[in-house]
Image 1: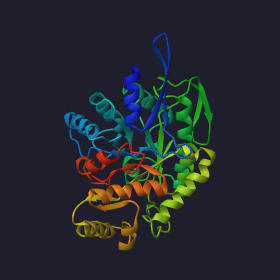
Image 2: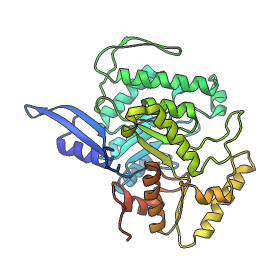
Image 3: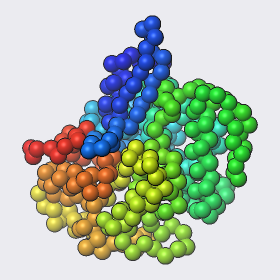
Image 4: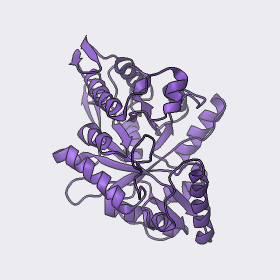
Length: 367
């Protein structure tokens, strides 16, 4: 499949990307999607990611994709877990067939579920068939119960993260032009040529999400987009006392910056909002958030204090103006410009924020 210049520009701009193409004899020869900025003095456009919630069949999946595209979101995301109805890469092709500009991502692919050579082929195929709309999402894997249920060995976090780093190197190599070889601790590739070549060159943008230093350092070295996540206690280790605080997000971004070095300016930072509620009763909405964490605590989850939640950069509760102002302030303070909707928030409920802020580089005027 090929795209004409107008289609490429439309797809790229919807994702906050700059699109470069070369022509020879009226034929598109190459397509490059480059993350826009940030150059000196520039501000990266705000964009938003969401998912479809529970979808039971093809029609519902396609309708969800069309609605999310119509509402102005940049990306449509599917998770990668055994208990979720549809396999993400195949389901995302169905969404691609039903949409025109919406980018397709995963939050996130568990690197332990697919050999990287197989994954490279599947991802490249999805990028070609979606006309260059793939955004790769990768993670180290964390849900121990599904490893055990599937009979997959659950290695310690440091081993899974090291394996993830090899996966990223292999994906980029197989997205390239010639035969690729790799010899590492976990994988060996011998002069394998990746086919098909992805439409986006040199490769589709790669997002890595996580909250620990080792994983975020891998992301800083290799990712185009880094999804900053709170580090919650999932393994025997001391719990982070304030996982949702501004200081915790600043520390994680510092880890990314240190690992990225000179390339940090080209890295897009993302995060998932903890709560974003448009309401004329912010006190009641905040109390519901506090109580939701109290309920999680009864099952062993992390329970932040009221003060931590009230001050968290990922909590935005109030009028539409208040919520939008909070998101713009987070971009200004932390450099985070790619926001995922909170768990349980429908695309429609958050749509007024998307309408107000998507693609903006300057603070919007109040409605």
